[in-house]
Length: 108
Length: 112
Image (cartoon, rainbow over all chains, first blue to last red; front, side, top):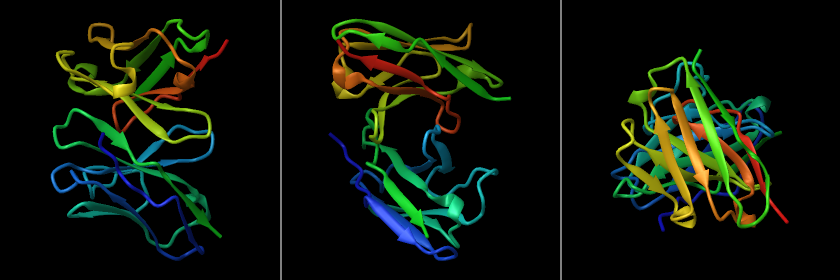
């Protein structure tokens, strides 16, 4: 079955840049999406179609993709950005969707 | 306001059945793929199934194939997930989502 690989955790100081990677064999052909989930809450989409940011998401969130790796960047991370972040995509056939295992971002 | 509201969760014994529902409002439901995503206690997100806007195509994660059936009623702006032969490992919060919009989830507990 198709898998997306993320680091389990990333730690940064407030104001620093956090980068979360997501690797998958089909990412050269399929879009990556990124979700933020805070404790006890439903996920929130922060990036869609590799690089696009919903209007309500702060500009410090950005996405990129190159080859088999997609990256979520939080530029100038804030304490309120502490959360679990999940990448999401599909296999090459488009029939199986999958989430990465999630990355816990700590800002302190 | 775009909204998704799930219902139908509860406590069920292994081997039992539940039917989850998702009521959609505030958008043109019949133009969107819809999905169910679940999250077991303390675990990450897991995609469960999705369905095409007209209901003609459905996909499932391997672990639920043959047990879960996804359907939609575009006239009623609703999505349903029929879950049969439930297992302990199906215990999770189940979210209805169109990708950019998520419901608050409904909890399914499978336990004897």
